[in-house]
Image 1 (cartoon, rainbow, N blue to C red):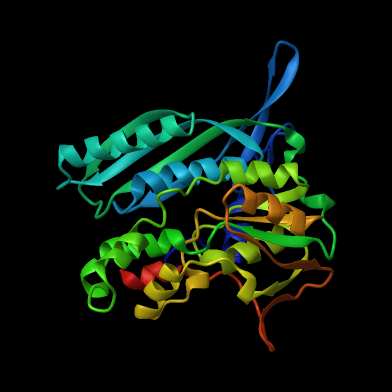
Image 2 (cartoon, one colour; image 1 turned 30 degrees about the vertical axis):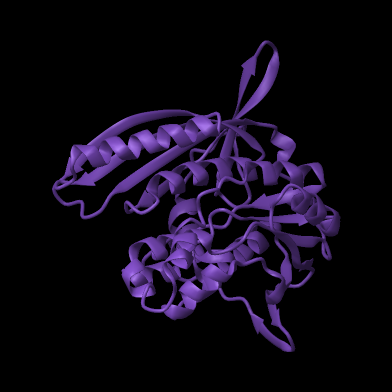
Length: 326
């Protein structure tokens, strides 16, 4: 199979269709990013939301793990509470590397009011790179996700700049090459693009302003995110490419390495379906987030991407552009 997340068809055929142990009380979010199950406390029913994600590689690993966990839960309408991880390392890994990784994760979790638990850590003979499995958990309301209530012509809002996760990783890993074209301060700024990747506050603002469904893109970039949003909402899309928020640093890094920024890792942004997209964007901008109404849902199966007078149709997610750098 190709690198990265498996294709949607494979996921449905070889993963979802093989699972027959679901509970009537539990449920998955429409984008499969998190699930929830009920517990009773003092006569009240609480919903525990959980998910799973895997981080590979040392570059920005702690931030990618913690921010990814927070964003997955926040998009699902959950308040982050804890994050459990397991760590697999190459044999040549030094103890100080493990220590620094866990320390950074602990600091980031504390800032997000999350508890960190390390369930397993091991150096393996056949592991070539760091692999961290992340299991976030939080409390949520069952009604927080309502993709069934969306309708055609509702606005699709992008909150946060796209591609900054991937651009920051590349700027750190390929600094010497980039310095051949760009000044050092510009590369440092690019490397810092993902310093504030948690989008919980943005998710709260979106829900307070009528968002019916929120999705957090990641691997595969914003194009994959749009596709996943359309599948979850069972709708078509009409998107204006020029409206999507993107930092100039991301554009320059991608241009240098001939990468498509719209297919580059985009943790640190959110997609939302809103009745009043303009109002939601205004509230996000007041809170300091970049945001825009990128387009709207449609009642067809077409997923249209516009750029000036040009029209193209969105394709199923492809391998993330970051893999071209490996």
